[in-house]
Image (cartoon, rainbow, N blue to C red; front, side, top):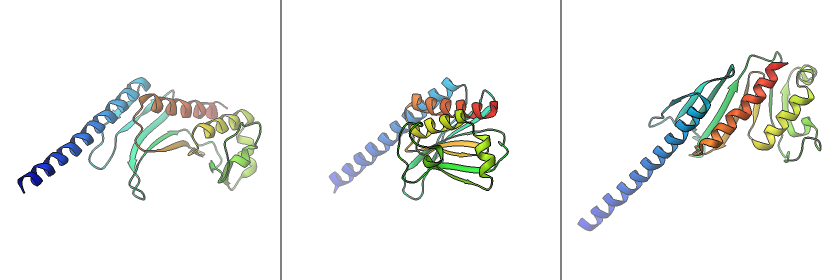
Length: 181
């Protein structure tokens, strides 16, 4: 009986220690990414994950780790916002759309588009904008765009600071390009 109790204590301590080490690794990675980007870091609690937020070149940025209650995983979401582009819409990867170069498949074949003003959206998204969005979609299949934001979601809490930095910089670059016109 004593051996069983000791075994249970050791296993529990090992599990708790592993969780603590992984949490420290995640926090360290997110702190590094926040520092590289010049953004603020907020550590997570028991329920919420870490958060990075701030502004890069006039573009508000938020990186969050949130629990996905449907499957028990944690998701990392990167969102950049910008002033409304003037036409309400929602773009995301079209179901069944594969990865290929932007020259081979039309924009509307790769994106599912929801809008009440398709002609306004076509006029708003110039060929360079479409190319940039198709390149983002190639890198981030979970890309979602609205008239006020770009967002990417990954499964799991991203533990690589370079990956966080790259995702943020890619989204900020496209958001700035959209705002420059």
